[in-house]
Image 1 (cartoon, each protein chain N blue to C red):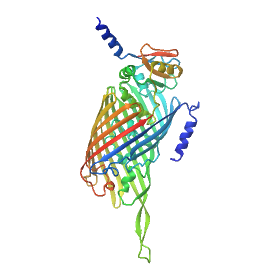
Image 2: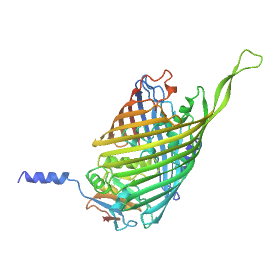
Image 3: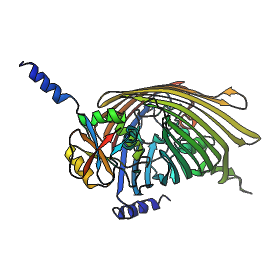
Image 4: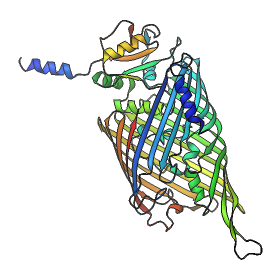
Length: 395
Length: 134
């Protein structure tokens, strides 16, 4: 699929302007940042001198061959310290058909690889130009499970209706997904077993839906979404020493090792209020998952919430702040696992259209977002700071 | 009197102009509801009720743009730009065509079937009709 993407884009460009397709639009962005943390490493070596392994690049092509049909594809490469590593992937590639069924009511069918719309801002995790801060509140939009939410390969049905009660947009979808072994899920499982080489990560079934309600109160949006995965398979090998009969010297051999995250539920609800240059948002979510292990199963529950404010106080300057909390719990023993609390301040500067610069400072407490694999000497402190600077060009 | 005239002139020159919604005369209706105008300029309404694609054109900056976005769309320019980038980079819409001058936007609307935009009140061109917003 990855190798055929350039060919697909070239083919799309080749028919640009053809009567059957109509005009094809191209857009893209390039983001580059610098990341530094104190005390603890975040997703890789970020404490000693920081890192420039922090970028996103995307290119898309879209067309509207009929008033009721849209089709498009976006390829994306991202790097967030040790995850992503700038592998070019299909971010989305889908078609949508929309059909009016009544005045101000339409239904739609979407098929392909498309964004799930999970959370107020889940679709914009990788799109720096689409948000005020460098990072979405990490308590709720953790990089660890990015690949579960980012998109689904499947089909969805949507409904849009407008009236005196505002506008409702709802979608339900079914499908599957694959995750990059070098992505955050792969890194998380790699840390469980030293030397674990992950070959594939497949999510057999992804079901979910979301609802956005633009209320009659101007600027107020209400959101709710559910996402459920069934059987997230992680397959790989572990090198282990084996004896050679009759020889005092052994050898290393690769043994298959698989994990099955049997099910994973995530429900989220939020509000966003935007009036003039001021935006306020809050969300709360709960995650529950089960993974069988030798002799039983591991259950975990995570709950998070955040509040976020942003204010464009000058035409080219915007400030934002957020506070989020993530609590994790071993569901078997009802004991608390590592948690996270984070306060962030960020500034966005748009000197000219199509170019922005951001800076962010976070004061964090807790290790829930961290990884022992990245901190082999142990966590230096429960308190750690994060500083990020990022610039993005888009067209 | 000498002080009043410059003051009036300054007020006239700096007060944002009213904006008028304009559309291609072949495909657009004579009037639209305020909700429909908002839906069009936020990418939620992409087809005309009588058939055909909605093609959106906007002024890239200036007092007319600020006035229109504030009155009809409810977003300041930066939030409006962010809204459209969210749609474009998730594949849900095409970016509106942007124009620095009213005359360029009017020329675009006149020659493009299904096009709609906004200009300073009182401006028009052959092939373009002013839409009454109810």
